[in-house]
Image (spheres, rainbow, N blue to C red):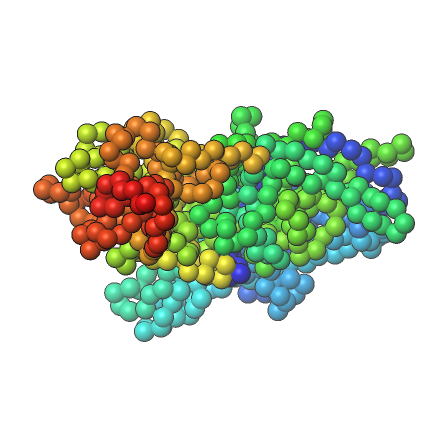
Length: 604
């Protein structure tokens, strides 16, 4: 299982919403009103102010001490989300939130975070109490740290009292809830100077040359951001399988069956980490809604061009991404249940209960804890990339294919190739089919062969994804060749839709007899999100070359085109090799028609 580290190890709280509607009312259960009191304190070191509330805000009312009190009616104990904010004063930096006391458990290293608490007191005079302490550090060292814009993100330093030759680590915590990322670090207040580093964390040694204040520079909020979502318990990734369909989720309670949520059959699928790596259906785009609400509070989820907007029946409810102290998230919605005598609110949580499909239900356990990875150029934990695990190798390189509904940038030295339909695609004299490299970014709906320097050998356990592909929100990106001009094709599957394999004209990238090439597949259907070679538009004489094809690299014959990949017939060393009409090498030919040296032969 992958090492579970959410973006920058300490992410700020992240809220997102998806339209949900309830198609059934839970059975009538005993309800009560529960009372709470949450207080944010400034630690004895001083150096800043705090605020706590029951809703997120972009303008916290910072004070020396802040309290949020109230009550909530619920089935069983109530679950209430509290939003904590801390702001450091000049020459101080926020260090962490401590729970219960100044020396208590580190709840968050980000200045702003939210947490769901269980409220179980039914007494207004003795409410359930929650106390968090903001601990600030005075900056006295050679190297100091500050946020270029505290409303976009906070910063930390591991050694505020550093002296000459000390190794110091600076960490930034951007407000990823609004799609804000760290651009880099600037030394001093002059905004015209170049960034000294884009690393996060950023480590340097205190010397007379490096001494000074380093400012974390953050991007503007983004209305569209990409993410991937992984369950903590199972390690499986959430995937959009098709248009949303919800059915009742039921559980046994004593001698009766209780409906406590929904199962998203044929909609939100859960797939193993090894299969998820390189699967575009696990990449979700969060976009703000037309009513102007930002991506942090109200958003749609889209994967492979299909929006996740469950329509269960009538009422709409927000689906909230709530950060826990350990960096995981609870993803839940509060459902209002109307009974004959009253209305009440209860929380239902998105879970991976081990079945094929995600469920939303009232039970809470480790199956409801998720890792959420925001995708950007510096992110390697849980990133999206070309899955070269157990794939095909040639000359020290690794190959796979890809077809996505979104454009993407090539990272980590990955290269992409297509087979354009033009006069240069086939050299009849050399019997060579030529692939052409295309430059990043790769447009949406472009089937490509990906060449990678590294192999993702253990996709389940590797903590960092190699051969990364960074999805881009600009849907208008175009390339030199259109989808119609590329002999490589692909398709997106929805609700299990398939593409029939025309076995006489379509070839897939595979390895036979340790030779990498395009070969006929015996499968009835082609694999979604992958590229296949459709030879319908090539001259008939070109088909034979591809049946026994291998990759060779370098210039096209007699031309200086170093970006070309040649797909050629077997070399002279294989003159005695015999193949059937499907391009499969035959060890012992029996009666029938075969291919030898590029020509048909008949074995009696």
